[in-house]
Amino acid sequence: MWDITTDPNGCTTKGNALVCNWSGADGSTGLSNCPFLEPGYSPNANTYDNTTTGLTGANAPIQLQPGHIYALLVDNYSRSSQGFTLTFGGNCGQPSPTNPLTRIGLDALFDLTKNDCNTVTYRKRNPVDAAVQPFLTYEWRFGDGTTSNQIAPTHTYSLTDTDSTYQVSLRITIPVLVDQNTGRPLEYFSSQSVRVAPPAATITASVDTTTEVEPGTQVTLTANGAEEYTWSGPGITTTNENDSSVVVTVTEDQRYQLIYTTEGCSDTTSVLLRLAPPRIVYNVITPNNDGKNDMFSARVSPAAIDLQVFNRWGRKVYEKTNYQQDWKGDDLPAGVYYYHIKDAAGKKWKGWLQIVR
Image 1 (cartoon, one colour):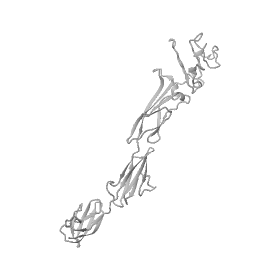
Image 2 (cartoon, one colour):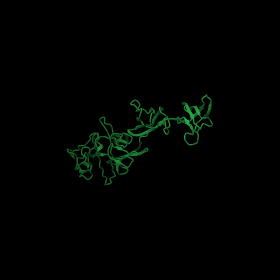
Image 3 (cartoon, helix red, strand yellow):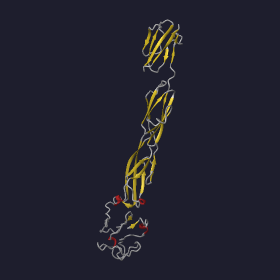
Image 4 (tube, helix red, strand yellow):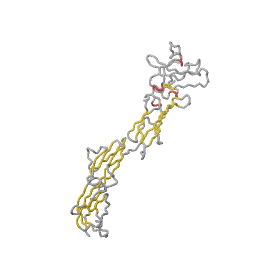
């Protein structure tokens, strides 16, 4: 047995062994002629004798040092029927290590920390004893075809337009220890999934943004789906630029931009509010079927309107709900008339019109 913490190459160079039971030595099997013992050991002086137990030579207890790594070579090429046992014990208040591999943190469980929406740091959950760490090899597989042998790697995934889930695994191998079931180096394995999602957000408006908006209309813009928002556009100030919902007044064609952030990643979207053109009443009609000013045009609202027409004495001469801009004056004589218009929102317009024949 060698202490490979203090003498990493001891077992390959036949360096300073702690104990040796070599059946090929002269004399009885034991320490009588072990050629590579640690300095100061006298093979025939029973240095490792334990008078309490009566154990001598290779059977004598060895004082193992906490945190050290030991290599034990067993070569049973002679097929002896005697076999061997390895027992962990303790004294002077030192407990017996019931599971020495667990005590030094040998497993492959790991945790992840998302630095932003697509960058993740992976780290072994249970710390490994500093003396053991140099003897471990790490194999991380990030689920996207890339790997790492770092102890605590940070990996950046490529962002796509949709959410992606990757299966991440960690395999820890201990070349100096052999699995008695497989005959291969001892290893530990675990895996878990990680979700990588691009930032996403939507804007909803209190008006139909596919149609024109009347001047002075107040519109509420609401953002959803992200963690942080930054608005810009007419009427946006430092007091509301980071709100999820803002109220703006339309005075012109106005585009509002939204920068949204989720898990440290940002993207941009926008919405355009289009101002309705000036509303005009063409108040002179010449119903002679020449295609010019034949009908009364009162385009005062994008909504449906109701029209009433009165003569100079206040008598109603025409009325139409949901007026379609198609009144030609009927058979009314030329002269001045008065109109009342109301749209679906209850807004009203009044004025005069003239029929010329």
